[in-house]
Length: 374
Ligand SMILES: Cc1ncc(COP(=O)(O)O)c(C=O)c1O
Ligand SMILES: [Zn+2]
Image (cartoon, rainbow, N blue to C red; front, side, top):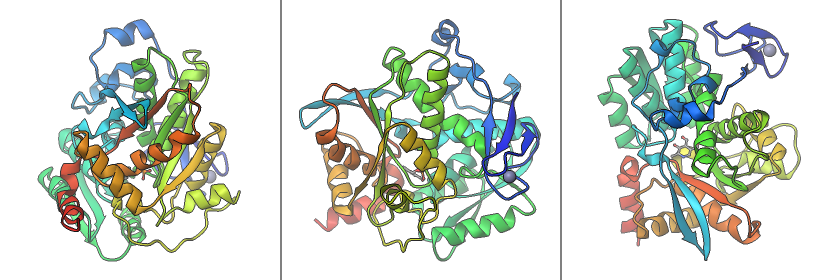
């Protein structure tokens, strides 16, 4: 049966109830049986909605889309090894978050919700703002005060309200949670419909590889919305008998803010409270990830691993990608830096996929600073 289920107390709720949290306070997951009809999928437009029967939106009329998705999977050679880099910076607002926003805002439209709040380091808020604009849903986005000017400009140009919050990313989340007492919370972290969008990354990768699973995927992890989505997506394809194994998920964190890596290495049940330091990867510095345990479980179940990369390594990866003709944001260089670190220890026969999660045009001021510092 299609339903929302609490990760903590297993309470179940109908999928069409406008809620983003269990009564016990915990996060919710979605139980839903996806259908994959490969012949039909092949005939459809190259967008993430080609997997229509695998996405839990009831009516086609609810779909909010810019024909996003099916981003190129481009081969690149790193240290003599051929890998595939998915180009999610080419999605409509310039980051992979559009996958989640398209499905979550479609769900909002299906429920008839007219007003939402969301908080983000920038990219998720930008994506929610754009899709809400398309759906004519009012929204207010809470961001940390020092968010990239381009991301704030995107949010405002899309017509959303913008609240800049002093302090940490966690202070921003607290401000949004307060607003969520009165207005529906379209959170990319709390709301399980967001992962029903990020999971299409897995569908597209497998289809682009001829309906085969890669051996490993190297993904960034802050709140882990892509890691969780990929875990759901690859496992749905496995359960449907379309692929015969799931890839190892190699999750990459910035060294200056790596609570998930620490919990994974130390085999801890709880995510440790860490003091986060400055990093050039603004989008990934999440000290207290709400779904931390779920992210670690996804990595562990895939026989994957966590990797940390320093700001120096992130900067090198950013410059190397630039030299190859890719203008990416420093946060997106985290995954590429992790990929470079992972390659020497990877199975030489395995197909490896990573991605560019965000466009460089979102952070030109930071890239300028990096270049001017030499
Ligand atoms: C460009 C970019 N890459 C990666 C991430 C990390 O995503 P998540 O926090 O969902 O793990 C973010 C998050 O905002 C981002 O903006
Ligand atoms: Zn519960």
